[in-house]
Image (cartoon, rainbow, N blue to C red; front, top):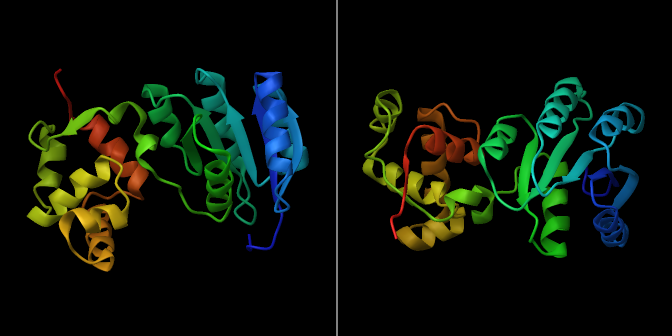
Length: 226
């Protein structure tokens, strides 16, 4: 998809009032076209086959297993020439949200984000990138990062990281962006990018989202005690 192409969106929203709000909001952007909307996950699957949207935008207060199944089916059948990206708006990232993030081209965003942030995230996603911000980590936001409590296998892989890479990894897990990590470590952003790529390669991870999942599941995140 080029920057000038129209991003076609299928809305899946269980709340009719919220759906109307999203339609009104997104329709104001000339680069976005709402090609369909439904409150039913089952109907969404059929509409995807006929409408072939670029992005499916799903809003749920509680993530359902049906939505995860829909994401799996749609992304598996998605043509590489025109891949379908799946964005889900959630209040928090629980275990089911983590499961959703394992699926290719699936993004979880905070329901409380601003309209400008949502439109920007849609554009970034449709272009083939993964928008990552601190609230993406959801329930990890109140966690403190510790690399001491990892499982044996994960710990072995983490030990392959240099001291600086470990620090960058800790900051990645907390949701910091490359510029924020660079400011924290007082180094150039290009240096951070190099460290991030090295971390992903050593841990055999695809992207920063997988890094958060890896840390979550491997026990690299310890919850703060009050």
